[in-house]
Length: 252
Image 1 (cartoon, rainbow, N blue to C red):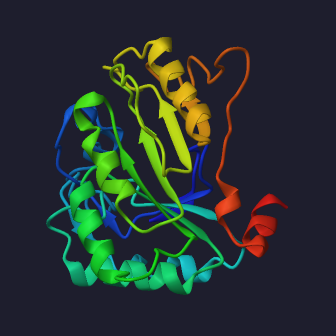
Image 2: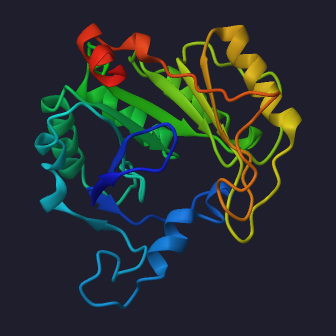
C-alpha cells in the first residue's frame, strides 16, 4: 500500500512487503502488528493475513507513478531485510528506488547485518545512491552493534531511529551518521521514556554534527504528550546530502 503518512519525518509510506517477526524488546508492542492483526480473517482486506509476512509485487511501481518528489518511508509495515524476503525481490525494490531518483527513500531495519551484506554486494566499490537513506533501529544499549554495522556501509546518508527508546544509551558514538530520530513508545502498553535518555542522544548529535529529530514523548496515543523538548521542537533533516534539485523540490 502507498499512502500519505502522519509520521512526522516522512511524506509517504510504500509497503511492497508487509508483516514481520519479532527480534527484540523494541518489537514487543509493535504498532504495525497491532494494526494488521485487527483485520486478520477479513476477506479482501490488505491485512486479511494479519501480520504474516507477504510480498506485494503489484505495489513495486507505485513510486514511479508519483511525479512530485516525496520522502518515502519504505516498508513501514515490515522489514525489507527480513530473512524470508528473497534477494530477487529486494533487488526489484532497489531497482525501483534507483529509477525513481527524484524521491528520497528512507529504509529502516533491525536486521543490520543482512542489510550490510546485501548493500556490500549490490554496490561493491561504490556508494549507495544519496537519495536512498539507510537506517537502523536501536532501542537500548544492547542493540548498539546495529550502528556499527551501519557505519561500515558505503553511504553518505546513514541514520538511526531510537524509537521506541527504552533505556539510556550512554556515550553513544554517532560519528559517520547524518541523522538521528528519537521517539517514545505509543499504544496501550507504552513504556515510559526518560528525558535524560533523550538528552544523551541530543548531546551526542551535537558533538558529532548529526541532525537531530525528536518525534514524540509517546504514551497511549502517539501525540498525546507532544514533541516539545527543552521548550522547542527539534526537526533536523539531513537535506544537505541530496543533490540541489531534490533539495529545492522537497522544500518548495
